[in-house]
Image 1 (tube, rainbow, N blue to C red):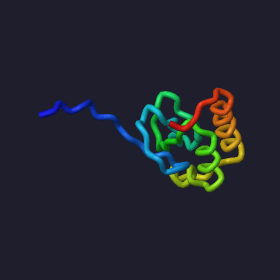
Image 2: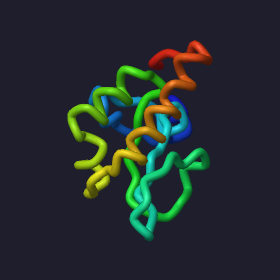
Image 3: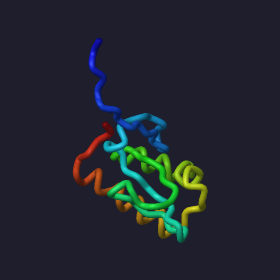
Image 4: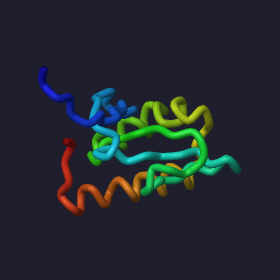
Length: 98
């Protein structure tokens, strides 16, 4: 019998609905006080949603309100701008969807 590999948690991107390993995605969290922020550690308390490190996924998630729906909240204009600014860093770094 073949040995099984270590379990890798899989999450779904709310922008493109593609799946990937949890560590390859960026977690966005609605904190307990209602703010929406990027969670670099992936461990903050609150309701979370995952997105690829791809600007197109972030655009789709924000344009079609998929992110707001997944987080069960409404996004303010300031939160949208902050999230789009974070997504711009993926373009600058040349990161693409994995």
